[in-house]
Each structure stands twice: as structure tokens, then as C-alpha cells.
Image (cartoon, rainbow, N blue to C red):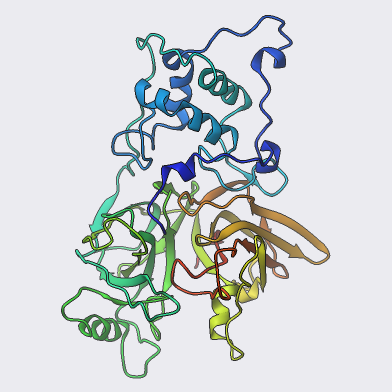
Amino acid sequence: MKQHDPRRSMRTTTMPLHARGLPAVVPLALSLGCAAEAPEPTFWQDVAPITAAKCTACHQEGGLAPFRLDDYTSAKERAGAIDDAVQGGHMPPFLVAHDGSCGDFEDESTLTAAELDIIHRWATGARAEGERAGAPPAPPVPTLEGGVDFTTPPMTPVVDPANPLAAHDEWRCFQVDPGIEADRFITGYQVTPGVRSIVHHVTLYRVTPSEPSLVEGKTNQDLMTELDDASPDRPGWECFGGPADGLPFQPVFGWAPGQDVVEFPSGTGAPVTSKDHFVVQVHYNLHDHAGARAEDSTRVRLRYEDTVERRAVFLGDDGFLTSLFEPEGPDTLPPGQQDAAYTWSRTRAELALDPALPPIEVLGVMPHMHERGRTFDLRVASGAQESCIARVDDWDVHWQSVYWYRTPPLLDPGSSVEVTCTFDTRDAEAPVLPGWGTQNEMCNMNILVALPMTP
């Protein structure tokens, strides 16, 4: 992941708004059938209520975004770029199409046609300030209330430039004892990197140390201890892919840049037993970054509940990445193409879902690609019927998220999923390999499904 460039978040696009799941902008006066011109909007009376509701949780001091929108001077200086970004559908960041053509998502955080009209008229008009009195304050910086914190050990990442699958990257795993005295459920999380510019992703796994590993004669704890001891001068161990070969694990969630507080849908939670430990995997990318030699310590905050109605289970797969392990060698992307496409599929059984279970609800989806990613398409096929359940028309690696369904799609016992990603490989001089590095590529599907409670 390259260091966040605010110009990228504020780039323009020629893509029509309806193609991005947004209504076309109609001047408010015309949409109401009014002949009179609408009053000139001001920042504090007209724009600030919109930004306070949908923008300034990130765009404030201490927020995720690179500049403030709770300040008139800052907003005025960037008014043109702000208008380009919101009219193009890039801000607030909501990458999946949400016009009903491909999945029915909870999208209340996006801007309405009327809100887009107000911002456009202010940005292209006098950009008047108005009276601050009575304007809504910025919301507090998002915080997961009632959470329990732990941090990864301070560490300065290093890379192996000779590794063709991660020349500028390190993946490091750390064992954490959460100290849970009874079985519980994770219902929300918040990840705060110590050095945002170099943390590409964080994945939390659940492991039971006392259980046997897949290595004969060793428990899971034996295996993790050996891995950690292999580099006594550095905390944790190298862990490209999963936490370790031979270590049974269950992914709990994944975090990527752009996420802040994530709360599971009501009544669902990821199970954790009193015997479990966590393995926190941090992917560091050091390619062309200021602060690349900085020491990072990433904070993970978890919220627990004692009971839930259904288990929330995180499923991740990537047919492009897993081609690395095929006998005939990995698939690659051809260089020099604007839309190099790759498609893979899995049956429900191949996703390790019990075939005896009835149709399973998909609660949310988190697409993931790297810097060359352009589009993402996820479909579910059941018999002769096929439906699109998630589509990204303009990928942005800096603003990734979990997108929750308003109407959850179903995976029945005979269904399968198909994923198609496209990539811009025009800068590549050789075929692009899948891999762990940010300069390699992925076509990664992550979904959170709801399963019944086990007896």
C-alpha cells in the first residue's frame, strides 16, 4: 500500500453517477419544479450539517482522513476537489454499487441527491461562510465503546528484496492471550495502526494452544513457541498467508485501510472460548513510504458479549492467490493491459460450510485487491439462477470497508460463488504474479456469514 495521497481520494471521474450506485445530481430548484433560483448556500448553515453527519467523523483532527471538514477555511481551500470527489462518488467512500442492481446494502452513510446539490452549488458559487452560531459540532472521533484493548509488540519491519512474492513487504504474526475466563462472542472491533502509512492489513485469528497441531507430537503452543523462538531478536514470526503451516486456526476478522469502528449486525458475534488465544497478523508494506523504517505497534480493540443469537463466521478465499500452490505453477496477469481479468469460483462445500445446513445468510462482504485493482464482481449461482451480490466499479486500495447487507443474500447447499477481478497492468513489464506483496496482486473475497449456534 502506497502512502495515502489525498489527491487520489479527491480525483475526478467521467463515470456516470448511476453506474456507481448514486443518483444523478439534479439542481434542487429544478427538481422541485421551482422557477426561482435557490438561495446561495453557506458553509455553516447548509454544508456543515451534511459534513457533520457524513464526513467529519474522518475529516477532523485525529480522524482517518488527511484534512479537516469541520473548519471553514480548510473546506473552502479544497472546495473544488471536494465537489469533484462527492459528485464522482468517491467520497464518502462506499466502493460497492448500491443502486439495487447488485445487492441491497445499508448505505445511509452516502450522500443524497439533495445533499450533492447543496455541496455543488456552494463549491461552484461564492463559497460563503455564513454564521457559525447554531451549526452542528463535528461528531467525536469514532471509538468502539466498551472495548478491550491489546497492542502488538513494538517492531520495525524489514523486507527481503529477493522475494518475488513480497519484495517490499513483511507479514508478521504475534500471539496474544486475551485472558477470557468464559466463552464469549466478539461483536465489534477497531484496529488502530501505530504507523498508518505502512500497515497494509491486519487479520485476527483464533487458535487453541492446548490442542494438537497438524505436526505430529506437537501442540499448537509448541508450534507457536518454536516459531517465535526462531527469531529471538524480533517479536513474533514470519507468516505469509495464514499464521503457520500445521497450525489449525479460524479467522475472526480482517482490517484494511479505510476501516474504523466495525460492529457486527445485531444478534451476531464471532465465538471465542476460554481456551483460545489470538494470533494477530500484520502486513507491513515498505515500498516508497515515508516512515518505512519506523517502529510500529498496532492496537486492536474488541468488544465482547456473553450471548448472541447466531455465530458470525468470517470466510476468505482467493482463487488467484491459491494458484501459487497448483502443480502447474501460478496463474499470472498479462502486462500492458488496462483491464486484465481473472475469474475464479468455489462451491459452498469448498468454502467449508456444512452441507447439512439450510440456506446461509451472507451478512457482509469485504472485497480486497492491491494497487492495480480496478473492478470486483461477486456472483452467486444456484441451479440455473445467477445473481450479482457485490460489485465495485472503481477500486481504491486506500478506502476499504466491510459492506453490510440490508437484505442478506443466501447460499443454499448447492450454490457456488464466482469472483471476477480486473487489473490495470499497463505499468508492468512482465506478467504480474499473485502473492503476498502489495506489488503482487490478489482477487480476494471475504464474506461474513451467519450460522446457527452449535449444540
